[in-house]
Image (tube, rainbow, N blue to C red):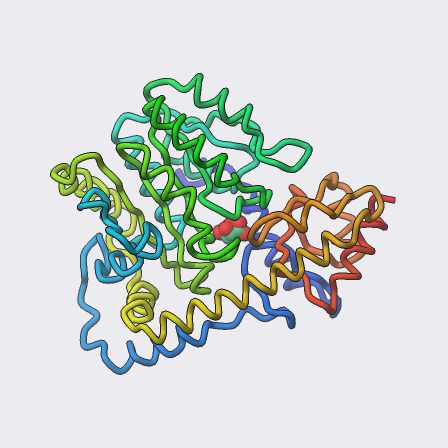
Length: 392
Ligand code: LMR
């Protein structure tokens, strides 16, 4: 039976990690998978996380099962940061459960949407490739609309049209901030409009917030999510701590559900628990417990937020340098300066992306997406020269 299975292509983004690791060139540049890097190319563990890990090691008395919802102390401690310090649960209308990373949270959100009767998700494209893979695996169709215009701003006309033509069994997937892969986010005024359109249409939002704090700031990056939640009766929010706590491989995320009536929460949430039980039974505990310990301690929280500020400042410096580079070959670098988060798309053909890798040792996704955090004072000029070379 098993040989009936056809070979699947390796996930292109994850395959890039292996290709990069196998490249012996010392001056290779990794702009592939979305992990933060320092100016020396390292992805260190946050000091606040290390301190909380030590605390966990000393104080944890049991590793007995917690249940499919995971560590609810973690889930609740995060809520003021995501939904705002004043009434983060909106009078009990929002609650959540822990998930293995943002991917686990998206998986739960899409699975719950399907169980609730959603048959199609509207989604700006390009998007994070795993959104479409998860939807396909769950058995939900994606209807794409154009995310950004050639001028490098959100394509509001395409979004308006997608919302206007939505069917009653559609949901819409929106990136809360730091759009992956374009780095092109909605402005606050655009979020205001989107919130109104979603409310008027009665369209279920699935909000993916995977990079809070890596764009403009923790509060600023939550604007869109909070604005939409203030307007609509119900929503699903997939949250990742993998980037803003540097927890990548330990997989820390949460699914939040907002309902119109808190009295319905237990019944709706029980479906999330059932889905989790069938998928992974219980989320891995370690990262969630550590994030909880950080957030329960004012000094550790301040240390974490300050480390996040430093990361964002470095990325903004890199973006400013890219933006100031002007035109490299046929690529105008100026827009990269004003984009948000880890990613931007360099408009290169697949052949040019290959030439970047083979000739210049620059690893980037096939879409032309770069992780700007992979650029440092030591390699940014070489990157710009490589783009100029392959597009000359
Ligand atoms: C990325 O897009 O690079 C990250 O979200 C990592 C991942 O899991 O794809």
